[in-house]
Structure formats: structure tokens, C-alpha cells
Amino acid sequence: MKTADNLLTIAVTGLNAIDSPGPGIAVIRGLREGLDRPVRIIGLSYETLEPGIYMRELVDKTYQVPYPAAGSAALLNRLHYIHEKENLQLVIPNFDAELNNFIRISPELKAMRISSFLPTAEQLGARDKINLYRFGKEHRFLVPRDRIIYSPAELKECAETLGYPLVVKGKFYDAVLAYTMEQAEKAFYKIMAKWGLPVIVQEFIQGTEVNIAVLGDGKGNTVSAIPMRKLYITDKGKAWAGITLEDASLIRLAHDFISATQWRGGCELEIMRTKNEELYIMEINPRFPAWIYLSAAAGQNQPAALARMALGEEQPVFEHYEAGKIFIRYSWDMITDINAFHQVSGKGEW
Image 1 (cartoon, one colour):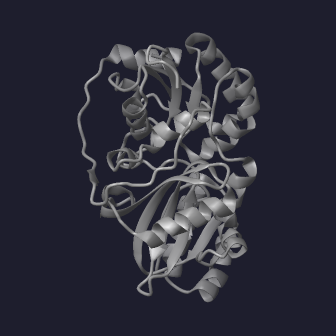
Image 2 (tube, helix red, strand yellow):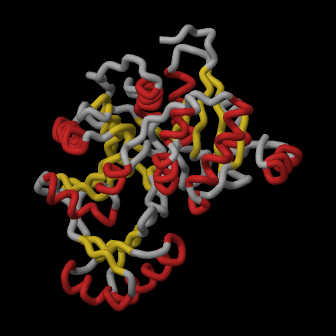
């Protein structure tokens, strides 16, 4: 463990603390509270109005980075510039769409002495929504049946095979429940316009949704697993309040997932529990969820644990957490100055 007077500089993405928030701010809170040394947080943003940019009590400095579509070379070039200014020691990306680029450049980052703790490209691809049903069959997990489609003409066959309602999903984000063909077609075009092709059409599973924040060490060991049930859900399907659960079957499922995949880093399992107590894996999000600060409140600070493992430090497996911890999000009008906005939009940093 490094001494407390040794400053640790960490770059974090996902600063869009909006009604559909990224995980970045929650990750930063965990890092600041869970690491026993001074921490300097460098925000990496995509938009000029991401609230985390202006939350100077949490984010010390922010640089804009290229959108993931620009490719890994553009990202690496920008990180070279940021590293020269900030001497980064660790980077924690928090969006699905950016992970491929960060994984591709991880050898170059390591050569620059910037640590990361990411899944492999193979691990990332295996749990992709497009491959989820095949992944479930291979590892004997319950996963809803699905169809990967490229045209609305394929929706008729989906309805005949899977039945109504259909769950129409984007390849990165968003899901729409469709009870009719008209609704399914509308959802297809909306999701295609936002996320591109293919579109995933999934069998609807009736039950109670629960989520598990999981941290794996890349060797098949589950460092932490915290189950949470949503108490309040927004119209976008996002948790606005949730409570930690004590449930051995959910913890066992998390351990089975980590053991089967040798997952390295944080992830979120979205689970549907049926009335027969069957546990279906609906999605596997390959990064920390936006509610990850709840793990710290419950006694297993996953962001801080990931940072320690990334830096090659000892991180014991967590054994206990507190059930009944509740998080509740709220809106707060933050005031900043136009000069700050001009710095971000004009110079790409502030």
C-alpha cells in the first residue's frame, strides 16, 4: 500500500449525472471515500453539459475525449495529451460503448504506466446482448430466448416464436415492451435510429427484477457481490431508489457467473426472478452500475477495491455486507459560470 502522502491520479468516465445517469459520479464517491491516500480525479467527458464536469468537490479537472465511434487511435492520442498534463496512474471507463476502445489500447496504457482493470475482448463479446442466449446455454444459465434482427419484416416471425409482449432492445442501451406489431415496429425504428443495427427482440419473462453489482478478480474469484431490488423506477426504467437484499441464491448466481467467465472488473447482472423462484439473466452490463455507491454504503466498496487490484495491491474477498441499505436519488440545481462552460466547449478541458 502506498503512503498517504503519495497522490493517486485516476481518470474516470461517465460524468452524465442526469435522469439516466452514468456510473462515473458514484464511482468517484467510492474512490474518494475508500482509498487511504490523497486522490486526484480527472474526469473524461463526451458532452459539454455533463454535470460531473462542474462538480469540483468531486472532479478536480475534466478533459473531453473523442466519441467511441472515432476509434481507439483517437482515444489513445487524446490520453497521451492528458497523461502528459496529469501523470495518470489509473483509468476507469464506465460506459459499455467505450470499453472496446479501452481494451484495445490497454497494452499501450500499460506501457505509459497507466493501470486499468478491464475484462478481455473475449469476455466482453461473450456476454454481449447479441450473444447472451448462446452464452446462457453454454454455461447453463437461464436466459430469455431472443432473435437478432436487421429488418422490421422479421418482427412477425419473432412474435410467432416468442409471443407477446416482445422486449425490443438496442445493442447498447434501451428496451421497449411491445404488446402489438404496431408497437414493435415503432420500437424497432426508434431503437435503430438511436443505436443502429442489429436490434434484439427478446422473450418477455414475468417476475420481479433484481440487480447484482459484482466484482471479479480475473481468476474466477468473486471479490464482491451486492444484490439490490429497485424500489422506484423512472419512466426510462432506471432505478431511482433501491435496497440491498440478503439472498443466498443471488450471491450464488454471481459466484457462478464469475467462476464460469473468469470476469475481470466490475459488472452488473440484471436478473428476473419468476414466481417459481427461477433466476433469469436478462442482461450482463460489463461495468459498474450507476447505483454502485450503494456497495460502499453496504460495506463493500467496489470502486476502491477495483482500484487496489488495478494497482497490484492486496484486496481480500469481501465476506459481509449490510442488507436493508437504501439509496434514493434526487435532483439538485447546481450553479456554475458561463466561463467554465466556455472553457469546456472551446478548449475541451476545464
